[in-house]
Image 1 (cartoon, chains in turn green, blue):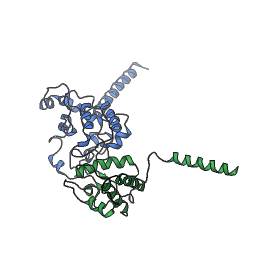
Image 2 (cartoon, chains in turn cyan, purple; image 1 turned 180 degrees about the vertical axis):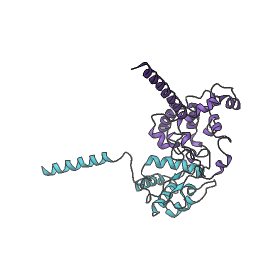
Image 3 (cartoon, helix red, strand yellow; image 1 turned 90 degrees about the vertical axis):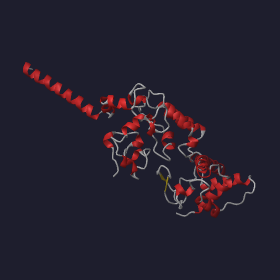
Image 4 (cartoon, one colour; image 1 turned 120 degrees about the vertical axis):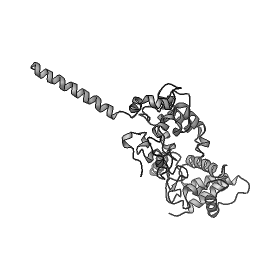
Length: 139
Length: 190
């Protein structure tokens, strides 16, 4: 009897716990895992590399801007919009807990910023490398 | 009450009323000042359309009583969320249809967010715009040019790195973010 009660209590707590989560909130590692899943379906995919992500982040890719143009060479520091001058909160999750917590936001900004920096979408490999780099940056 | 006292009372009432009128003129929107000099500026900007500034006038009020959380959040990521009344509805439709190439940046939104924000902007666009024009930049409108011409703003102000660009409203209008451009609050950085 006690066990049944205990089990149903646990189940109830789990349901309440899930419901209390803000909608779609995820952790940067969960987002990395979903990029990994996406990458594994593409040809020539390899494990993500923070070093490769760092050089990708700091390089210009034929255009006017790099990622660092706005986010600076230190993603744990605040940045500044290259055109409007508006302040940008730090990008590295170690310095800003709001980063890489919403898949919708991540998708929106990768689309915009890859288009601005590379004039195309980024591959899952590139996104994964960059996120691996950002996760490795310490505050 | 004696007749004499009644008279004094009336005079007092008239004086108070007159003071009230003067006060409201002083607090009135700076538009009224332009209206008084309407002829001169009307000439300058042509009279091909009805209304002030050749029909290219911002709305009143520029910021609607009710705002929209999505508009506020999404449009203030890279710049301040420009008040909807600064442009006519057709301008907002054009801006929102071209977000993937937004003044040199990709500012695209998903379809649902785009639809909701477009509706908010269009519903609260300038209500005093009678011209058939629909500029994309607020700084290209006749009202903006008149209010920021060389008589009003010295060309040196625009060269100040703290001002940087006419798009940077908040450099001189501290409450621009809230759609408040009251002339009395203007602080031009030195």
